[in-house]
Image (cartoon, rainbow, N blue to C red; front, side, top):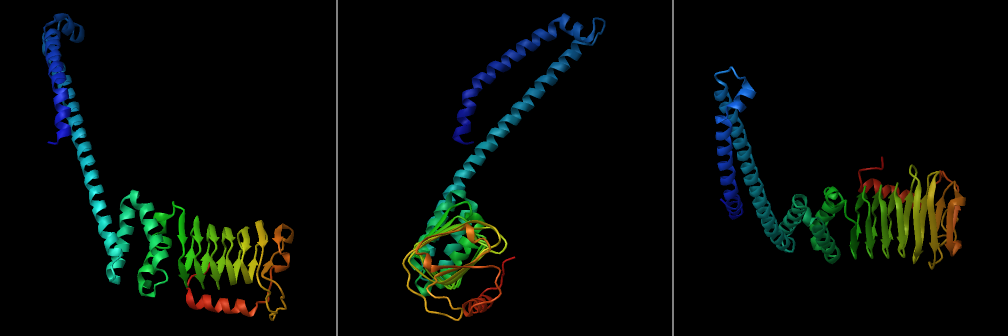
Length: 340
């Protein structure tokens, strides 16, 4: 019997003894008093005292059962508390071991460490933000190391795909990370700072911020509440055909071949354009245009800064530029899923 329960029983033992003695004395008085038995079972009933005694003993037995259940409840509660302490101690041990595995030079062991940390976050909510931060920092340090591509891809999958439901309550933050040939789908509340994106697809992405990133040959499809701030953006497109457009592109340093296609509903489309170099004339005759916006709600597009870098065109459009054809070809060859 554990110390806590022993102390509890000792502290209540004297009280229990006194209660038992009082119950016995009260019972003796009640059973011997003829008036109590007569009032309950009738004056002419010769078995009145016996029936009164039986009733009294039944009541005492019921109290004993209740007391026994209470003791059982206390034992179970204490056992659960001890189990919780043991589980937390075990999880702390698992965490330390998993960190060692993740930093191992053997790719198989490192991947095992990543999965162990992910499982730990599933089992113990205390570790959810801790594991997310460890994964984010691991990507920042190692994403440029091609020898660790398998571990990097595993962590990206656990953070943003297979295991995203575990971390979706957090505001994930990535910095100084290379994301190449990666698909982001159904993620929200993510901040990317000084990251590099090359040939990626962002599908159904919501409420995300891109700060000082290098974005090249990327496709944003049906995305909502995007904020692109101080990025270098080249050969990319943003297409919202079925959801209201809510987009801010602010103070981006370099823009070349960025096209935006909006649905008929624009909640917000704000463009703040600075810097940039002149674009060469292409097959569509666009000269000095950094952002091409296809929309039927031109009056709802807010343009500030160097407006000559923005060209508004009517939507829907049927003609595709060679760049758009190239992006379609790349997307079909690299990814299987389309926006529903």
